[in-house]
Amino acid sequence: MARSPNELLHGTLDVLILKSLVLGPLHGYDISRRIEERSRAFSIEDAALYKALYRLEEAGAIDATWGVSETNRRAKFYRLTPAGRRLLTAESRTFREYSAAVLRVLDAAAEDA
Image (cartoon, rainbow, N blue to C red; front, top):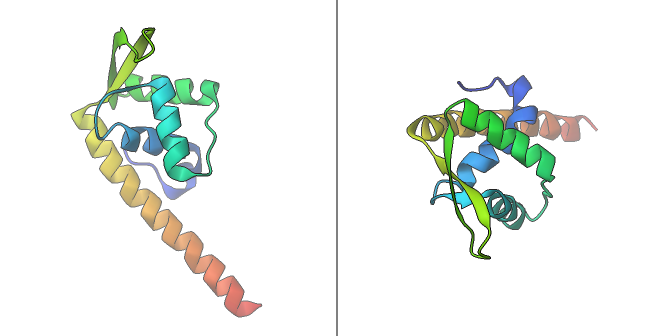
């Protein structure tokens, strides 16, 4: 279920989570760290991250299993499902369209100034 551009702002974290899981399963802390490292701008709050993970799991975009982290702690590892891959493709397309539209407005505003 792809989001409309108006809903995109609220769903940005979802697509970032899905993208972070493309290479394989990760636990919550590693998902957050991967997003923060790649973006060099975002700081993901735990509450927002786990709400998004729960929402994506309920939607069937990811699934989870319990395992042991590299620090020997019990952790829930999240994995992208086939439905999640399809959602990532759709969400990525929508985000690119949204970004292009915003840039068109910003560029036009610069010309008008």
